[in-house]
Image (tube, rainbow over all chains, first blue to last red; front, side, top):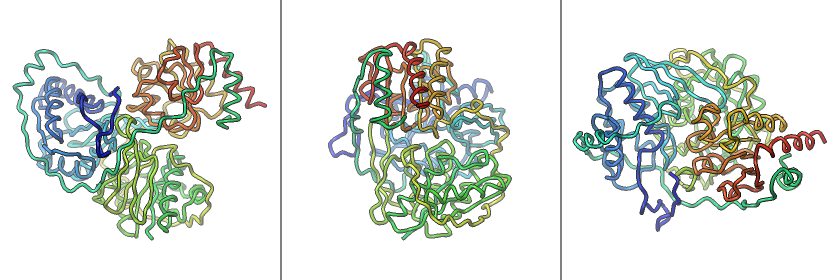
Amino acid sequence: MDVRFKIAPGGKSVDETGLKFDISDFDGYAVEAALQIKEKAGVGEVVVISLGGDVVQETLRKAMSMGADRAVHLKHDGAVVDSFAIASALAAELKDGGYDLIMFGRMSIDTAHGAVGAIVAELLGLPCVTAISKLEFDGTTAKMRRELEGAYELVECALPAVVTIDEGIARPRYPSLKGIMAAKKKPLEVKPAQLPEQRLALDSFALPPERSGGRIIGEGSAAVPELIRLLKEEAKVL
Amino acid sequence: MSNVLAFAESRGGDVRRAGLEAVAAARKIADASGGQVHAILFGAPGIGAHAPKLAAVGADSVLVVEHAGFTNNNPEAVSATIAARMQSGAYGAFTCAASATGKDIAPRVAAKLKVPLAADVISFEVKGDAITATHPGYTGKVLQTMTLIAKPAVVSVRPGAFLPGQVAKAGTVEALASAGDPSASRVKITETGTGGAGKIDLGEAKIIISGGRGLKEASNFKLVEDLAAAFGNAAVGATRAVTDDGWRPHSDQIGQTGRLVSPDLYIAAGISGAIQHLAGMRTSKTIVAINKDKEAPIFKLADYGIVGDVIEILPVLTAAVKQARAG
């Protein structure tokens, strides 16, 4: 997402003109991790699901071009910002089971609340492990590693379960030409999202204030004494 | 007139800075709305001894939930207990830090209470009973301000954004029982460990020294570690390029896909300033950049920039910091 954003007129969204949509980083890891589980097991199905406007179909096709078997598009035009509402719509779709694992990226890039996966687990009554960086799956249990600040946990739980995926689990593959061609023929089911009323109101979007930075104090190690003085006297951090 | 429940995060038998910051954020809400702050502290038997630390930063009361099943993280039992407490009393809000543990707890609590949440909040305003929160989205490039319409409000706050002040309150200790058996959680922790012996936690550090590709090779991270040691209490971070190459563990990564930090001082050594990295550290209070390319984006963000080779400059800076701290 190395792009410059503009705020759209009205001040409540980002101007999407010229933006290219793609699978976000963590969701890409989740798709890759799911494909690797299926490939290792030799059986099973990877289904990708996304909620949003028609723009998400591009993302679903990309996941199918990587190897996912089919896709479900829960269609909702307009902004979705309330994690609880999004999770409710996903849980309504997933309530009948038929899966061993539900995998989420640990957070989205746009609204960035990092909450949907765990809320879906609660609504479905499933165990949940968030922000995992390793996953072993034997068909009945999942063994995982979670990264904390300066520490880690190894955890396990029975299936079915919900997991959210952190970095480090798997580098997403690039779709092959054959994969891209095959994805065009794979099933993509479109359904209206059963989105309850959103109770998180976006009041405004703003660009972060420019830092007063941009002050180059010198070159090479000769600038170190001045830096020390500034850290002591101006920033007061030394 | 509603109270605020704050998650007093603990690890290894002690309260974490993240827990103090959750209390600080709760204090701000309570002072604006005329309520009290209740800190909820989970841990193995004995954790209650740390309650005075929470009182010192503004907890009117401390709810202590002691059980061997809370020795490690136990999000199922912790979130169930928090939700039960929230439902039993007049709580207007729940706060926790947007740490690895807090980010795990907050959505579970929100789900049980059937309310939306605001995560990774850097500032908020309390107007009457309504909380308006601001958090960075789109890799930190856009600040989104939102109002939580449903009550209670569930808010996780970015580490470093709410500093615990010395606002001593009574901190009356009350023992609370876990909702459900903490030993019966479906997710079992089989092992825990630290990322490195004696390592200072990125989420807790007031000073962070980060290294990037400008260090040229993994072994030169020694120069970053030496500078961190000279400050005495600094943590070492890294860019995604560096953790992807295996120079440092993924847990050291600062950026949109790694840790989001706001230390008092952030020194970027040999880091050009890719947007993904800036997203993780742009809210730091003072930023120093050292890079050989004077056009590098990091200099636009830095309060103090030095143009030059980090490998030459870092040892000189380390010596100067040692001297400054000794004097």
